[in-house]
Amino acid sequence: MTTKNNQNYNKEYIEYVKKIAPKTNEARSLFHAFLVGGFICLIGQFIRYLFLYTFGLFGDELAGATSMALIFIGCVLTGFGVYDNIGHFAGGGSIVPITGFANSVCSPAMEFKSEGFVYGLASKMFVVAGPIIVYGVSASVLTGLIYYFIGIFTA
Amino acid sequence: MAKSTVFFKNKPRICSTFTIAGPKEGNSLFGKYIHEILKDDRFDEDTFEKAECKMLSYCIEQTIKSANKKQTDINALISGDLLNQIISASFAARNFDFPYIGVYNACSTFSEALSLSAVLVDGGYMKNVVAATGSHFATAERQYRYPLELGSTRPPQSQWTVTGAGGALITDKGSYPKIISATFGKVVDFGITDANNMGAAMAPACCDTLLTLLKETDTSPKDYDLILTGDLGALGSRLMKKLAKERGVNIDNHCDCGEMIYNLKEEEYQGGSGAGCSAVVFSSYIYKKLMKKEIKRMILLATGALLSSLSSQQGESIPGISHAVVVEA
Image 1 (cartoon, rainbow over the protein chains, first blue to last red):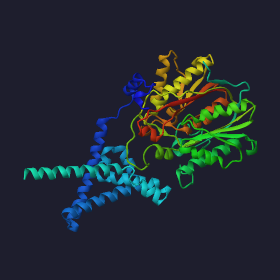
Image 2: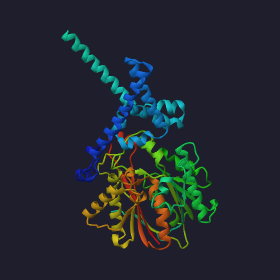
Image 3: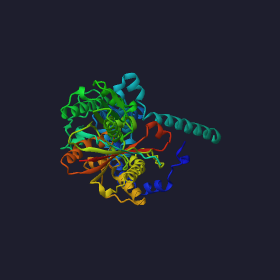
Image 4: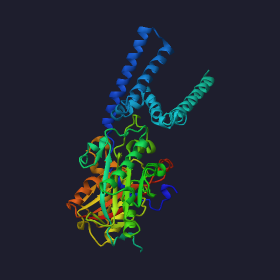
């Protein structure tokens, strides 16, 4: 039985609830997300320059090393219980950058460690990030195919 | 129509209570009335589930102790919590040498346990019954929502599960607050599907039980010093009062445990929730007021949202329930 077939379904009540339920302050959320998201990117850029000028990394190596450094920072902050506080403030600003992805893998791993390293930590590790990986990979394959066929027909 | 209210002839007494709560609840308005505040919400255990169980177990033990009774005097324990297969209550019960009746009605478990204890004592079947429930923020979060350290934001209609446990010992005589009647609630579902908005899901059930109670006991809200709901939260309370008004009942002596328990900061939004919420508030502050006879007659209406994480993922709406007990000083 789904909601719509439910005989108790009370349209009037649901609409009233929607009307009086508090709304997320979007302007403020966006501003916070912009501030923190931008700041994370700034740090990323700084790390990039650091690797570029001190270690002389280039191209893919440079991009990979920068991502790894950010992932490491994200995980460490999650471990110290700081990242969720940043998240409460920043919303999307700290979820979208790669540090947010690190947090989404690291936090379930910590949480489910109590059920053991195999059935807990390892199996629950991707409980949040799993869907992102599945649909991210699928979308990239799809995009790749589209590019491939466009390339064939326009060549 | 068959009645859902049970009137107690012998008026079972609540002869002692005990509450224990986490550090966050300890800093709240009720902090100074709660019997024991934990410094750390892990309670020296290695998992939060074990901590919740230990909290409940400790609470049961102290409830019995503060009534100057021995564990051999207890006929039964009626207990429940929010975790799957009510493990906290059942695992707590293995520490005791008396029968255990496990119950589950989500956050309304406390008033359910109180009602059933009163039924057993009033019928003369048992002399001393302990009713205790508890919940823990970290275990509920993990079961119903996301990992604790995940940097997600909470929507503004959400509530915060109370870390705490409360217990009451129901006995047959003595000069203690009396349980006059119990009204068992129906499951009411108005089709709310947002698992973050439990106040809205529970408000119709709460209103239904309250109106049934008023009708069957032939009383009006003015006859009570306090109508105390469990964990409707700020939004749910507003909705409940509106629904009651639509049916011709004005409630102005209403308080909600969930709405009151936290110093309103942004993080908890609509207030507290959980099986421990009404148990902690009622068994601490409200019980003391009853003992001092500052509250003479009141209704406790704990409310529960009967959802599971599975049912909400399948798009099912959230059924609500509420059981009521009338307590006199």
